[in-house]
Image (tube, rainbow, N blue to C red; front, side, top):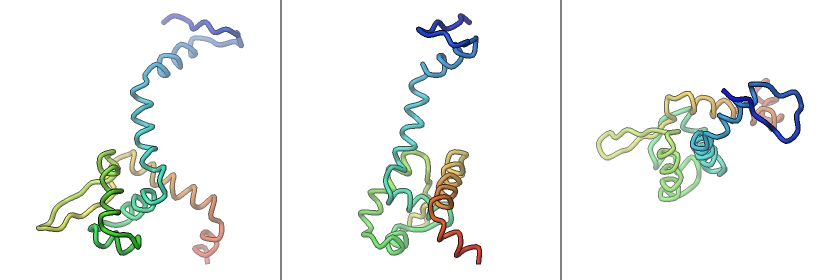
Length: 128
């Protein structure tokens, strides 16, 4: 592996070439951006968070979110396409839940940690 030559030398070594190699894998970063894009919407974060805790049908999600079923379906589609949630059909009913993947678990944990950090009143109520 050839050592990376940067315009300013600050003592970089062979690890710089490894970093550059990873930076050149644009598809990897695009995949990450697509997953994060799904959580760039408050409604999708709320739906995803809900589905991390339970499995629900569109009608129940709609009631819990105080939204119309078509609006909820509009948000479920990209979450499902990104692999963050999965569905199963039981008769005419379709149930949704968070996917059992490392990505889903990490994003759920991240959401809850950010909520804990940014919502101190929530944490104080739960501690009581």
